[in-house]
Image (tube, rainbow, N blue to C red; front, top):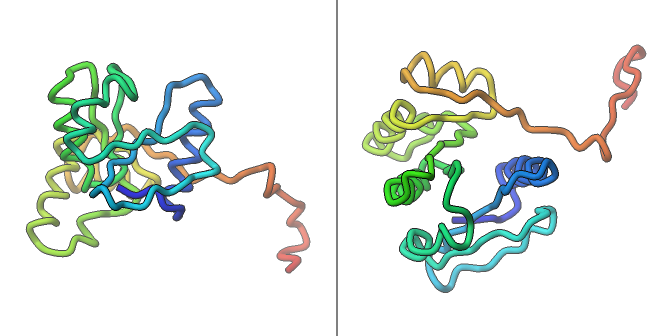
Length: 168
């Protein structure tokens, strides 16, 4: 629902950019919550995001605007329901949940917590940390694809000789 620049969106942008550079048809999709939603610009993204005017618009036009065969990753638990609905309409699309944190642990209420826990066992999951990958598999009997650690831009940051310790 939001492409505002935060740690999670930076992480997603880095992954999409890396995939695009390898020739993969990777896209960021934004579903506007309402017609007054701000249209944010993500200058770091090397491909234009595809914006839909709500879930109904996404369900109707995803195949023509994005792709009709592939993996659709829900970046949050909140987006898993619309992604699953989309994949139910088109069996050539497969849902995948991307979990950046242990979502049930930050759920606002018990009902949401239970739903998030069920999602870990109902859908394939990719995480951003080895420990979260283990929790999904062992605590929730979930199927994990693995984990993708947040990367470091080696054009900006680079390894140095650390033999003398922290030079700050």
